[in-house]
Length: 437
Image 1 (cartoon, rainbow, N blue to C red):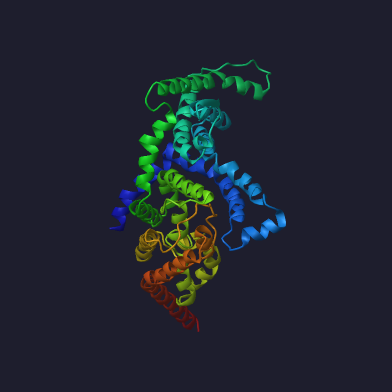
Image 2: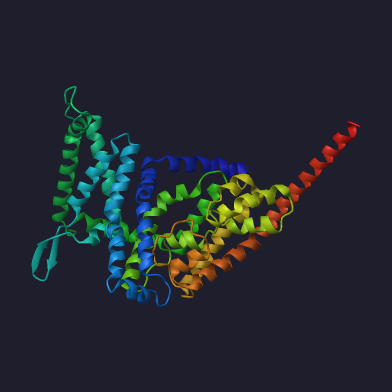
């Protein structure tokens, strides 16, 4: 059975992982992720979930101290669509063998060409760009623009539609002229796209993509079934030695990212948070200690298991596991190609996902606020910070205890197996010693 699963899943996973578009989507979001995490810290400090926090700092820093921190967070969160376009075009251009910076530059210009530049105030029109078009609502426009602009750029470069400068010209000058005609072709193409959409009922490409693509996809992604499928596939792929989230994130990341940004905007504005399922839900309330929710497994290995192999591994892996790094246990126990541990490794995240989804939907725990905590934030702390309530930590603790019961019979079976192997090896060593007397 295991071999059949491997024969079916490995080619599919490999094909998805090697797809240049999906790989570029994943890599592109990773380009801007450090900025999001760093600025989230400023946002979190300005809105820390402790009663009296704002009043305390107002007394020290004055009335406008929150504006200082908001200026940092808004510098990224109000422009996530534009930044996503940059990161994805950079990664896609690089993966397609093009000059990465040139690819990102033409994508940014293309994105801005398609962005509405007229602001209606009463009966008057002003030349301006609203950040609503550049922020989370523009993420899908940024993705499509990045891919299409790089493809057009590559089309021209592949046919040598470039201006070649004579030898001796500085490389920077030569490269700029090489990109001249391909860049002009990209700009012309997106100019025509803008003109064409202005002749339709949608008026802009932004309105078209939001209505036809972004809204339906976010609706589908914002569901218990979607989150459960994500964790099931990610865990299943790990069991075959494939980094599951790198595959599943290629598909789900854009959707979860937009949902997280919607929650963040609502939280900043003091409005009702709209979405249960987003990146924080996946990162903070479905897996503890990394893929497979292996922190509970490590606790059992460290406290109950008796084989030296398991206990020594647990001592080495427990600290990284607290911070979500579980490669030591995945490849050291191992989890990979281990049918005994594969069962709870898949079941635990799925059970956590279902329970968390039900608890959040019933309103027992506040919804996640969209602040992008680092994935290494330990459980209990992350539950409190991501929801602003101790109830988030309580939910995490409950699920980690439940995962102990899920893992226990399987790891004890494996532990007993390893213990028998160790005792057999010791007896063999004793026989060898007697034979030498």
